[in-house]
Structures are given as C-alpha cells and as structure tokens.
Image 1 (tube, rainbow, N blue to C red):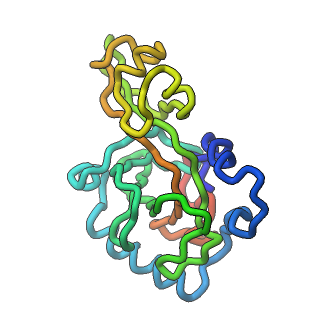
Image 2 (cartoon, one colour):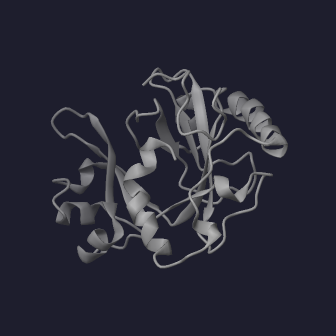
Length: 215
C-alpha cells in the first residue's frame, strides 16, 4: 500500500479482527495481468487528459488534504467514496511540482468480500478504516496544515459525529483554537481502496512506490 495510508492500517485491522479468510490476505502488488493492463492504459489516457494538474482536480471538486508522502505524492480527495466506474476515482495524486499527475485511488464502501471491479484482481484492493480528516490554517501565518486526522472513537467521545464531522469538535479536542481555523473537514469511511500509478512505473501500476518518482 502507498506509504501515505500506512498510518491507518491499524484502524482497518479492527474491521477484520478475528476473521480468517482469503478476503483479508495482504494486497498484491506485482505486475498487471492482461485485463489489468487494459484498465491501467485506459485510465492513463483518460485521467491525464482530464486532470493534468491539481487546478484541474480542484475544478472537479477534489480537495488537497496531504503533504508530499514517501512515494512523492500529494493527495486530493473528492469525498465521494464510491467509484462507479474507471472515470471516477475518489482520489488523485500529484508530484510536488504540481505539474504531473502521478496516480489515482478508486474506492467502494467496505463489505465482507473484496471487490471484483474493472478487471482488477480482488487482491489488489486494500481496506482502510474510518477516520476524520481535516485541513487547518495557521491563524498567525495563514499556512495550510495538511495530514491532520482523528480516529473515530476519539472524535465521537468528544461529542462529535464522525459521520458528519464539524470543526467545533476539533476545538473541543484542542486540535485547533477556533472553528474558523479549519479549512476542510470530512469523513473518510470504511472502504476498499485500489491505488494505481497513472505515471508509467517499471515496477507495475499497483506497486507501492515508483522508482521514477523521487520524493
């Protein structure tokens, strides 16, 4: 899985605690098979044409919520966590220059079985547990602060509703001083997630990292 999601792996594990099933084997990251290669080729052409820069993603409703991670990617999410087809990724990721689309995430709500979608092997999909993400603003400098999150038990214990998060709960948790310091807050639900490199990757489109991208 991409490094940007490793911090949530333990939350996802809670979804399947005590379940011994092939559905919950580790995700596979080897080179694409024939059907998968067709899927990758199609999204490379489509997404590069529609979302070549972060500005294009933002026009389509995607919002940045991370810093550059160890894969060299900065992630943008559209808060729509059901990818109805290959043209609707839930996330897009760009390089630090903001000039290159690196990859995309496709997601569907979590169920007991891994998805069979897009001609991709079910084992490519990884599970991620629910949490609350937010982007804050430093009131003194105006600098945006990314990679901010709260796990559901902590958020709900403070009187919030993780399904419909509000900035006021972050104030109660002393994570921000004022609700006005919160630029974006959203629920990241329990999902199956498929990460795909749009930029050509000699290790395959489903690999954790791309040797051609230097963080």
